[in-house]
Image 1 (cartoon, helix red, strand yellow):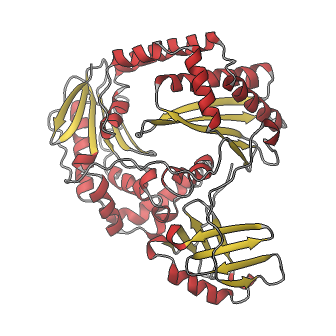
Image 2 (image 1 turned 135 degrees about the horizontal axis):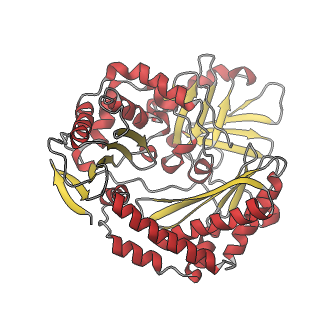
Image 3 (image 1 turned 30 degrees about the vertical axis):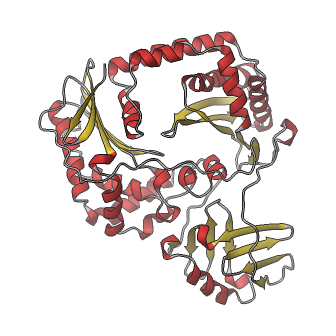
Amino acid sequence: MIRQLEVDGVPALLAPVGGTTHAGLVFRVGLADEPLARRGITHLVEHLVMYGLNDGFDDAESHRNSKVGIEHTYFHVQGSAERIAAFVTGICAALRRLPTERIDAEREILRAEAADRVGDPLPRWRHGARDFGMPSYPEWGLGGLGADHLNEWVARYFTRENAVLWVAGPAIPEGLRLDLPEGERQPAPAPSSALAVTPAWFAGSGTAVAWDTVVRREARAAVFANVLERQLHRDLCLRGEIAGTVRTEYQPRAGRTARITAYADPLPERAGAALGGMIDALAAMRAGRIEPQDVATVVELTCAGLRQAERRGGRLPGQAFNVLAGLSVRGLDDAVTEASAVTVAEVAEVAASAYESGLLMTPAGTSADWGGYPTVALRGPAAVSGRTVRARGNRNLRLVHGDEGISLVEGETTTTVRYDACAALLAWPDGGRRLVGDDAATVRLEPALFRGGAALVDEIDARVPARARISEAIEADITDA
């Protein structure tokens, strides 16, 4: 049973478990809080905090790690009570005095890590270049971050009021201190939407098929996600030998919603068949064609998983997230009762709702028009009024620049970024500019390609707020892999 306590003014959750004690310190800050021009700031803080906290974790019984998620940043530790106390106390001490002399070194480590990271394009298409769209973007802000930026971020988010401690063990370890600065609880940002209509589809750049949706956060939605995975595995991996792997994920959010994702990795030359299988499975479940045995099996496994998690303290992180969201701690019996009561009809209701808000990524060169999905349409702003700057040698390409923003007109297509909704201005020494709007719209300017391009660069630089400027060459780019 989870008990609610308080340690040094910080809410704490304690639950007895068998085996080695483990604990976590969670803060309500994540990628969704970062503006695009500061993308990577939370990750850099996390790396600086973890520097120097490795002592005593070189044996089989001890372990520590940390992670920046969409809405939360957490530090986890397993080991003796003494090591847990030293680790958690050390985190707070590091936050009080960040080792800012390590900024350059940790920045390079983060860039090396990013080289092997595959981005998820779905958030950008659904949310734009803001809040829950941030996972789609590289850590473009790293180069411009200094000690003042990091300390301001810590002062806002890494505070006593914005943290929760949880301990899976017999007691709060003696000597554990949470010497955190005073602050305010920071609510998670509300997810924005860049989509004019759903369901919708866009083409990715690789062979993968992916789908996501947003639903109400509840047990039947989690059951639906797992039933969908069983159906996709049966259709794509067992019956048709179309995909090597399929997977789904249910991600609860603070605002009482949840994101559900589904992925299929096709076998060679089977990308089109994988897309068809995904579309067919989603349509069938939307129509209520759901295997009752799948629901019964998933419900049974869910309840068994909840009980097992309770025994080993696995429910504590989720309950800590609830506390940070202003929700109550939920007991095991309530969670099991809700999950065990889920019916086939309720899963079908979730499937219908999930379909209506779905976003589908098709393999490169394919379309989902045949499946009844309209092409993605973004809620972009209208073209601005102003001076027209024409391209050299291309009559179909021009820029329109005014006080409100800039529009790129290419044939019948117009893309606009308004200055009051500019998420980032990427600037290169050769004069190249890329403006990214909150809605993810992008306008690129190579001054040599436009008549009067150099003067236009100066006008853009004067109008975009300094906080949105990223003044370094960026090699990483956005992909739809």
